[in-house]
Length: 357
Ligand SMILES: NC(=O)C1=CN([C@@H]2O[C@H](COP(=O)(O)OP(=O)(O)OC[C@H]3O[C@@H](n4cnc5c(N)ncnc54)[C@H](O)[C@@H]3O)[C@@H](O)[C@H]2O)C=CC1
Ligand SMILES: O=C(OP(=O)(O)O)[C@H](O)COP(=O)(O)O
Image (cartoon, rainbow, N blue to C red; front, top):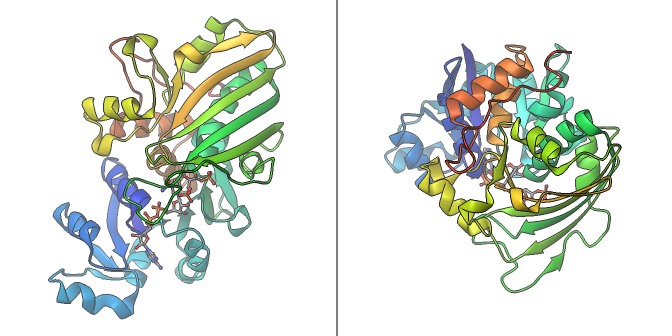
């Protein structure tokens, strides 16, 4: 049983805690929070032991009538792995805390690749974390996760000569009132190519990829406009069959009448997904096209949740507790990953194409 702590219980942390609890081979030791807000109350209601992320603020919890299981050092001591889900840049400051107790830690995409021993995506480079020398692993950001999951099977099956991606990025998360834009479209980053391509290269070092990003007044999901020049010239059906084999790629059937990210989220909520989460890349099936060697498609990424199954797999990988296929299938099975649309028939479970290597 892998003992897991979560440090930082916000958009990502609360989802990681729920996903860990759903795994039969993991025990959620507890979650660390800075203040007794509505998310702390939810953690208590779920029975998650609560730890003070900042010891000096412990009294705030007691004054709010919330019993603490301890302070952050106690959580780190009791955990085999801590999943650090603090705001961008804070994780790096916590490395010494984890080192002090020789506790392995996962960081999120807001941390620098230089701050860790390895950057991780379960489908593209799972084994990179299965090394005794690896104490700190970064689960790459939602956009990099979505791009790595798509490029890995395409490169394995057809060879990728060059990928060119335009990322239409949401301005902030729905619950994040401090962000925008409210009424603008921003080249963001204005420098091109953007940081996303090099971030994908922390996962797929040899991939020839250029990305550009814009930010728009939306909160629900990101949207990628994808063009990939392949070494071969597959048919659209060959590409469709390949993508269908991946449990974390959902081909949105045209018959479903899902015209955008709002209806995608509505579909997720209608299917009963917790918080309306979409752990999978959502690729519009109708957008798939191949012109000679050039593949085109649109995919949407639910930034709040696509990294969640990746964190679960990274826990097993850093503990060397399972191989890629075993972990991804276990994660998918216990979390419920692998959208099965009644329109598109039951999806095949993932069998990583390099599983037989
Ligand atoms: N929200 C998103 O779309 C995505 C975020 N990420 C990354 O995940 C990480 C966390 O992001 P979010 O969950 O969105 O942030 P968030 O702001 O929703 O949650 C962060 C939580 O950490 C708490 N916190 C602040 N300082 C802390 C400290 N010193 N110790 C412990 N907890 C502390 C905050 O109170 C908050 O509850 C960041 O690196 C971010 O870049 C990655 C993919 C997508
Ligand atoms: O868009 C994201 O990161 P990325 O575009 O830098 O890959 C993630 O959703 C986190 O971004 P945020 O820091 O705007 O919340």
